[in-house]
Image (cartoon, rainbow, N blue to C red; front, side, top):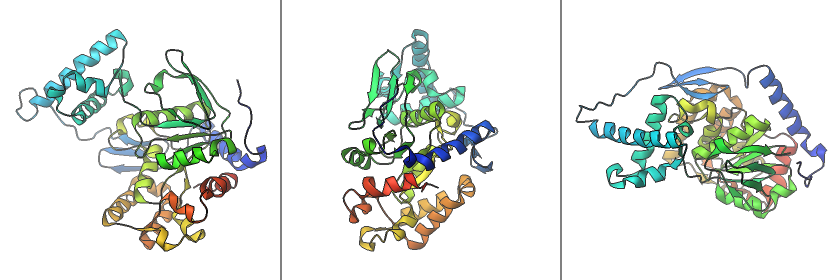
Length: 357
């Protein structure tokens, strides 16, 4: 069942439609962006996939007869036994559920998280194949319907958001007429766009936020939406090193989850805003900007050295603008122009005229 159109005239989406056509053409050719290969630590970079674990990377051995690793060995065996029961009974548990089965033994949630990642990497299977789920923190809104594994119908609306499902693998019968997917870095910005009725004004569209660094389920959902619909996917992040890194996680993945890059990354992701060059173009006053801290500068230098940046000259140029100015800006800096400038002017113009890189 299709959604009734609510937003702009079809001509508004011309740049997005052209972009989608180019993405589909690239998929038919069997590729994504221009090919590029690099190496960094234990990951191999392929531009069409993202960061992947190198085939001959350094491994870590955990022995039952070693005083240094006997506890880790015992914890992994404990969790493996629980995973076996989950798979045998075709049931699921969250990482939090596993932690509370014996919180004194595990000591912390981080211990469980790390052990499950080790098991997933060791067995070379996605975490969901272990029947272990993460508690979702992300939100989704807009032109999207789907069925959950138990048959529950979910209708995402333009006025309120719904939580990203805990079992992305289990959702089915996804339906949308969306022209684009907007990934929003921060929950505050996401909620402001909902309050400004952005989804209805720009309908049909989908909005997703991972509330900062995205959790696994939010990344899985973004990837599933891309695999299902192949619609242009753009990001709205702060013009700072942290925001850029979050965008890179959606597009290229992370070192810690490089063994599952094929299921998590969306190399078609584009940077819509906030661009450092926009700060100068819009004459945002210096008092609305924030000086880069030493930590910011270190993070920026680190991102600039990553292999995938060589395939993104436009991104590099924007980061060099930031480095030269020694200033960063939050999306909220746009309120200097007007309280609704982001939803009324900035994003519509960017989307209409193809202002992504």
